[in-house]
Image 1 (cartoon, rainbow, N blue to C red):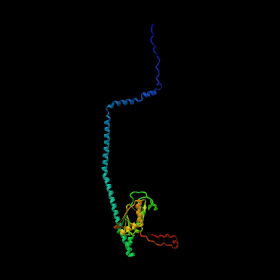
Image 2: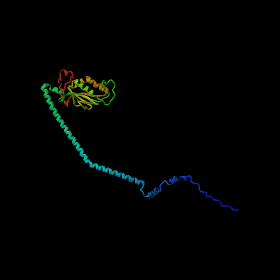
Image 3: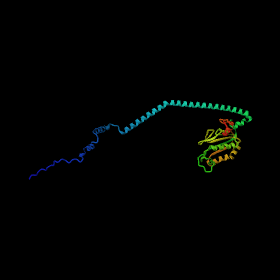
Image 4: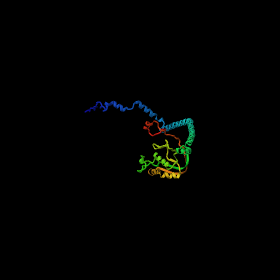
Length: 307
């Protein structure tokens, strides 16, 4: 009995599951373009002839250092080129300052000369109308330099600002709790020296007259509109020790001591064998005259004269 050969199946193979996504399959299988792939292959083949990475890093560093050296060299050269010009401009500025300073000194000498001339004429007029009282009038008016025995009083702000302890002498005057010397403090000090017998007074070289004003601008003290800087040196001409004792016993001397105790204001007073006070920088002579107008004028009279 003969056997029949096995019959092979000729059915087509089963379709791929992703056969319907042929476009996506092609993209996934060939994600890199053929041209890019060939370029990458060529770079890989030529990679053996490129410089090693450490050597490339050293060459880059050397190039950067060379560039920095070139920049520094150019800057130094530019500085050397411009140095003479800068030196010339600096010297011109110095020369200008010296010229202006010399001119200011010359003007100050002229002012002093004219002031002396005016003072001489004022003394001549005072001698004509006041006789032997001219020197006394000039002294009281501050028109002449004065020297003699007196008192030196140095007042300074407290070392550290601290709140007041309450009941201090400034609270009634509306002062804040501070260790700074105020214009009202200086007013009381000067008035106390006058009351104690001082014949002439100056503050930081500023001669005081009957028309002088001590005011404040912020925290600064102004004497005749000129700012003063602490410490404040007050010089007074008079009987040195007697004047010092009289001031310390006065109400204004007690006020200064209270400032020291309550606010830390520093001061020292000493009798001097001789002090020298300059003349007042400017004197303004004012004379009062009666107003004209009779009864109508008197009805609106303010009591002030003209200057």
